[in-house]
Each structure stands twice: as C-alpha cells, then as structure tokens.
Amino acid sequence: MQTIIDPNEARRFAGFLQETSRELRSRNAAVNRSLMELNATWRDSKYDSFEKLFEEATLQLERFLEHSEKYAEYLRRKAAIVDRYLDRR
Image (cartoon, rainbow, N blue to C red; front, side, top):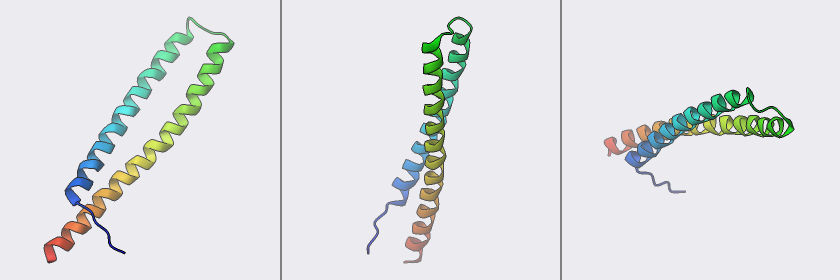
C-alpha cells in the first residue's frame, strides 16, 4: 500500500481544523449564554423542547470537537514523521 501525503498541507489542514473548532466552541458558548438570557423572559413547553434539543446538539458538537482536535494532532504527528523520512532521503 502506498501513502501519499504533503506534510505542509496536512499541517495547514490541522491548523484550519483547530481554528474552526475554537470558533465553534466560542459560538456555541455565545448561543448558550443567549439561550439562558432568553430563559428569563420565555418559559413554556416550546422553550423546554428547544432547550433539550440544544443540549443534545451541544453534546454531539462537543464529541465532534474532541475528535477534530485529536485528528489535528494526528495530522501534525504524521507530517513530522513524513518530514523526517524526506530529510533522510
């Protein structure tokens, strides 16, 4: 099996993935704060239903973000290995 990887592209994507993850965390936190503020003026069964959906989505997003951070680190390690291999040739 042959593997082809451009270490610079792998690092670039890892950085993009990490930055996007940070941005998603920040935006999710902002939505969560706004939802809590809305709780002061809107409290009925529709709000409760939406809040439950939001919490479920937040848990799924958190799992995705954890995986994306691990994958970004994997790509950086892989790029370093390829760099060492290419330097030896």
